[in-house]
Structure formats: C-alpha cells, structure tokens
Image 1 (cartoon, protein in one colour):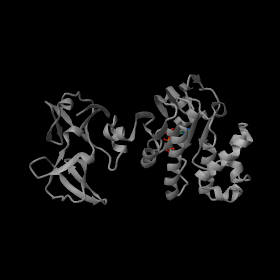
Image 2: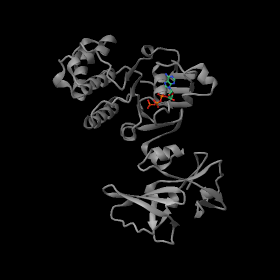
Image 3: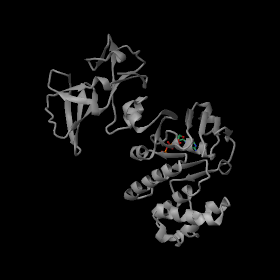
Image 4: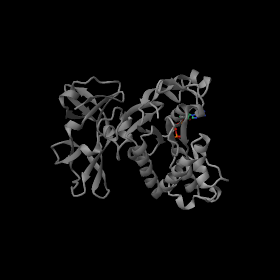
Length: 358
Ligand SMILES: Nc1ncnc2c1ncn2[C@@H]1O[C@H](COP(=O)(O)OP(=O)(O)OP(=O)(O)O)[C@@H](O)[C@H]1O
C-alpha cells in the first residue's frame, strides 16, 4: 500500500474551459496516508469523481503531480499504478462463475494457485456469495453482481490503493449496512489505503477514519467525523455535516458583540476580537441552541416543532434568518420562548472560512 500525495492538482476538462477559468478541480494539495480509510464527500458536481480518476490514472490532471510514496505516477496508466477500482455499476465477466471472477485478478498477477483458493473462499464468505460460488455471474441479480465487483477489488493484497466510486448505489439498503461493516473489517485487518467516493453523509461517516469534504472543486476540510462536527473549518462543512446542519447567521461585529437582525449578542473574548470579512457569519450547531424564558435570550418566532423520537427539532425565525435547535423530547416549547447559544460552542466565519472559535 502507498501514501498518495496530490501535489497542487488542478483540472479543467478542455483548454477552452481552462481559459474561461472553469476548473472542475480548482486546487487540491493534500495527502492520503498509507493505510488510511478516506471518504471523499460532497454534493453532486463538486469534483469527487474527477479527483478519484486522477488518483487512478483514468485522467491526467491539467496541472500538478500525483505521487505514490516517492514515485511520480502522474503519467502512468491505471494498470501501471497497481490499484484496484470498484465502480458504481458491476464490472465483471458474465460467462465466468462467481469463483472464477474473484480468482481472475489473482491469476492475472500470477499469484500461486495454492494461495488463490483460500483467498477466494475467504472473499466469497465476506461478500455473502459462498452458496453461489459455482454459478455463472450472468444469472445473478444486479445486487449480487456488484458484490462480485467489490470482491474483485478487495481480493488482492499487493495493490497500492483501493478506490471506490459510490460502490453501494445499486445495493439494497439492508445489505448496504452489512457490506459497509465488512469493508471496515477488511480495512482493520489488512490496513489498505482506501479512498471511497460518496455523497451520502452516513456512508462517509461510518466508513472512513478521515472524511475529505469537497465543495466547488476544492477540499475544504479533512478530518475525523468528530472534528467535522466540532470544528467545521468552512461554513459548507457546518451546513453539510449534521442533521439539521449548523446554523450560519450573517452578523456584524462591534465592540465584542455581534448584531444579528438587529439583536445584539455578547461574544466570548476570542470571537469578539476577530476580524470581519466581506461576509461575516456566526456558526452554532442546533445541538447547542437552547430555549429560555422570554426576556432572557434572543427573541425568535417558533415556526415548527418536529418530533424525531428521542429529540425535537425546533425551527424558528430570528428576523429574516432561520434557526434550528435540537431539544430533548421531554422539553416543552412555549410559543413565546427566546433562544440562547452555548457561548463555548460559537464559531466565527469570515468569507466562509473559520477565523475564531470560543
Ligand atoms: N467529461 C467531462 N467533460 C466536461 N465536464 C465534466 C466532465 N466530467 C465532469 N465534468 C464537470 O466537472 C465537474 C465535477 O464533476 P465530477 O463528476 O467530478 O463531480 P462529482 O462530485 O463526482 O459529482 P457526482 O456526485 O454527481 O458524480 C462538474 O461540473 C461536471 O459537470
């Protein structure tokens, strides 16, 4: 397995798009450590697949270099990079049996026969297809075929990295959970470098040690799920991670206080001293917003209360802005309540980037 270094990567899909400064990847300069499990997470069109294809060698970047350990692989083909790939839809041989499909990548790399049998048997068990090992792939369901694809990607132990592009899209929801656990287990056992593209927050947070959040052709933060929750470096991370996402409230700073829609809010010292940007926003997760009696906090208009089992989501209006709060299910919600922010959980953003936290 290898450390993957992305050295000042930029990519435009044509010279015309580059001239118009229309880059699918604006600038990515980061590294994936050897043996790490990474998820590339972000909305449709943010550049996840483009980045994955640059790592695999299906695409050559317009600018920058890809390195596996100390080797520059920018101009090498996917075969020469020695990686395994699993795509959204099955890539298998229909006329081969399930067992032959799984053994094929090993046979190709001239792995000794005595090793192939046990390795294939182990993979058959992990993907839940042992009972169908000798069936032709042709007759199987789309779901089962995708499991073969996953097995083929995971069966080799000599690859530099395993790359997944939304591999569970065609798998039914119940099986998704099981396969994700199996992937995590494989990662724990063999410590392979894995890069997993998804736009599904739950999938990213349960699979990866580190989540790489992408937005508009850039990596905006790499962190553990806890770090993304506790310290969103960019307002997009705050908004995208969590349900509901972080409240991001445009404000004006003045004399250690913030003004939001005419309401003055006292700030902790570290935030009160921060510099404003063209846009300045206060970020607070709904988990750290509470209801207090009228007159003791910031006046809001409660618009909706959603019951979600052990919690309630309160949707309110603070002037022209929307604010969400997550409360315990037993807490009552008076119509004339104020809200209060847990001071130690406030973040301040200038031009969308975190500049100060309490
Ligand atoms: N072959 C192509 N030619 C021109 N533009 C492309 C091409 N492939 C992708 N793009 C553009 O590049 C940008 C990034 O696309 P990419 O597929 O990498 O995003 P993504 O995050 O993987 O999205 P999705 O989740 O929808 O697959 C988008 O604006 C897309 O329209």
